[in-house]
Image (cartoon, rainbow, N blue to C red; front, side):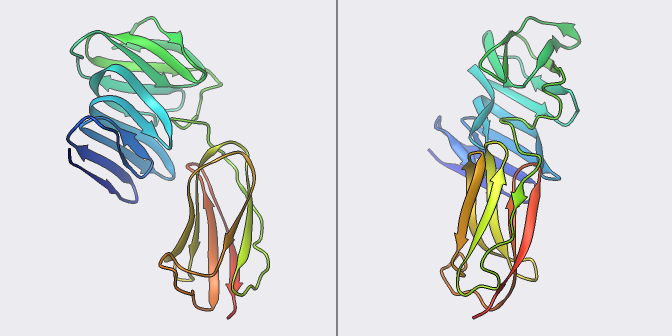
Length: 240
């Protein structure tokens, strides 16, 4: 088996051979190809080839019991649009979507059921455009999981500091979260957190070192706590 992955500021891509799960950043899939695009901090566009699962930030977004090829657009408020190629056999599809009120295929209603919380399930026997319509509970949900629209980031302490300081921030819901330290010209010096965190108060220390373990120079640093929908920043001063 071999595979390649790539992550840019807007795209995350998987290209592989074999049947095992592969990942690139927050994207994971068992397809021979998978892709997701980030726009303005939101991840709304997906595609996969011969996949039974596409996952974002640890949560399954689209799941099937047979390999399928699809492209999905989550950019329109109140709907989820997915274009499927014809499957080789009748396929059960589970889509991450909250508050589903209707599902149609090329404009004609089809039957669906509510699966586990935040999902809908329907049967696919031919290719076409599936439109999932959401009620108020599902509008503006980012695919995969609920994400905080606000994050509270306190001023680091102590400040100024030498050599270490503490960050305190609060997440209203569980979410993928990235905590980084940037220098005064916007270069990332250290990534402190890059993964799923639970809701509530979190504390994260920075020891004044960069990602290679070298002491950072004296100066002003920007601390950023980012989720898929928002980012908060504060500044601190390292004095050696």
